[in-house]
Structures are given as C-alpha cells and as structure tokens.
Picture 1 (cartoon, rainbow, N blue to C red):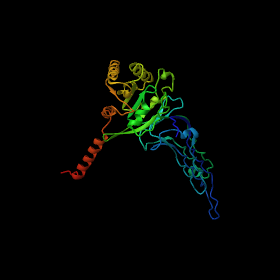
Picture 2: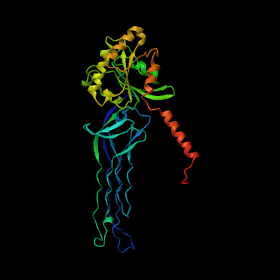
Picture 3: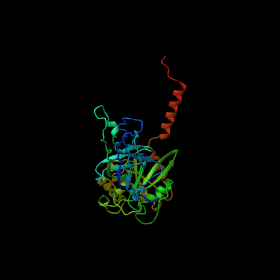
Picture 4: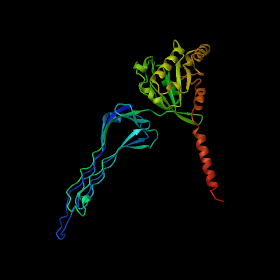
Length: 351
C-alpha cells in the first residue's frame, strides 16, 4: 500500500428537497384545500476516525464527496425523505485544514471520533404549511436550502509514542526492525526510508508504538533532501530517539545538524525529551565509543546510549529509558479494576 499523508478534497452537503404545491382533488370532497408536503433534509458530511487505516491514499483517486439531496415533498401531505449522511472514514491522527492551510478545522485523535463537518440543507415548505384562515388556497412553497460546500486539506500525523530520527544512513531502519515488528527496507545507501514507518515494540510487559521517519540533512527545513514534511508525524510523540552514526566523520556535528533542523521546523520538537543513541557500536571499539559519547555530552546531550541495531547490544538499556517517559497503562488498568471490585464488594449506602 502506498503512503500518502496529504490530500485536497471537495466537500458538498446535500441540498434540502423542495416543498410541493398540491390541492386535494376527490370526488366527494367539496372543499379540498392545499395538501403539498414539505421537502426532506439534505445529507450531512460526516468524518469518522477508524482503525486499520494509516494512509490517505484513497483520497488520491476520489477527491469529490457530495451528499445526496433530500426528497421532494408530494401531494396528500407526503413529506420528502431525508437523505442519508455521507460518512468519510479517515485514519486516526488526521487533521482537516482550511483550503489555505491556515486553520485546523478538525483533529481526530481517537478511534470512533465523529464530526458532522457540513450540515445538509433544510427541506422546503410545501403549500399545506402556509394554509391559514385568511389564506385558504396558498400556492407558495420553498425550494429547499442549498447545501454547504468547500475545499479542504486532509493531513495525517501518525500517532506514535516514540519517534525515531537522525541523519540518512544512521541505521534507523535496522534499529526499528530489531526492536519492533516493522519490516523496513535496509540498504547501504542514504534515504532507504522514503515514507514514515510504524512498528509495535513489546518490552518487559509493556507495549508502545515507534515511528521511523526519513533521514534529515542540513537544509531540510528549506527543502533539501526529502525536506522536513514528515516531521509532523512525530509532533505528538512523548519522547524522541536520536540515532547518531558512530562510524561517521563527526558524530557531534551530525547531532547538531539534526537539532538545528528541529529548531527550524518548530512545533516544539526541539523541546521534546530526546534519548541520544550512538548507533553501530559493532563497527567501533569501546575506547572510540567512549570518546564519541563524551563529545556528544559536551555538545549538549544529557545521556548517551551506545547501541547496535545489528547485534542488539545496548538496546535493552535504551528501551528501559524509553519506558520511563511512557504512561504505565498496565498499572492504570490494574488500579481501575481494583477500584471497580471494591465498588462491587461495598455497595453505597446512605447509612
């Protein structure tokens, strides 16, 4: 499946059905009178976040979404049927932006979240609704309200607990394959990762999602390389793992390059907690690794983990540190279960 994280689409809610102009025509009814029914309501445009989707590729082939209009009113006081809502299913993490991308109109962060985005038009009144003691045979009616329409942008920000970043060829694909169920492409050249990858990590009874994004290079904020458009996928991560290649010419400079691109991108990424991992430990001896770790600490790193995605060395200690930044869902669920059992054992009483 191809990955697509931005799409522009056209939306139009359904128009209301027109009211009817009708008069009773029955053989033994001397004064028939008006009996035109009202029109039905047009369909709404509804967005819903669902499981099982992690790309907007479907919106590349279908850009126009129009809800049906309401049914026509008819004689014998028959009302038009209301149109069904048009439900558009999107991945969790999708944002709906205005056409100029300046305003966030909706943000889907949970499975099952639904938003009525555009409301359908009201149905028009039939001539029976205009009948009064002074207007015995009205012929006026309403055509029904028009639906709302607009162009919007859909932008997907993958929801992950941990973000993985670094320069190209820092070993991110090998690392995510080693710690999770991901099957990222690995190659001995830069930019083997062209789109973000997600993996689920199981460590010491805990489970979390890790996201790997394409490598950053100097000038990414200005469009160099693949650019920084994929940085949006780690905006919501709780902690970042920054991989630095130990076999590079200057690991400290490599770390600083990525930090500068994060600051240039903004959105608070430069202030997120970061775990600096000196990767490819299998390609260097202990003395060299210790020297590079000291250089990274001098360059601003709080703590440096020496790891190897290829051999697994040092990964357990790094994942232990990751867990300290994540909520303990297991203990939360246990506490909730204990509270529920206490409530069941001791029912409330006013005495």
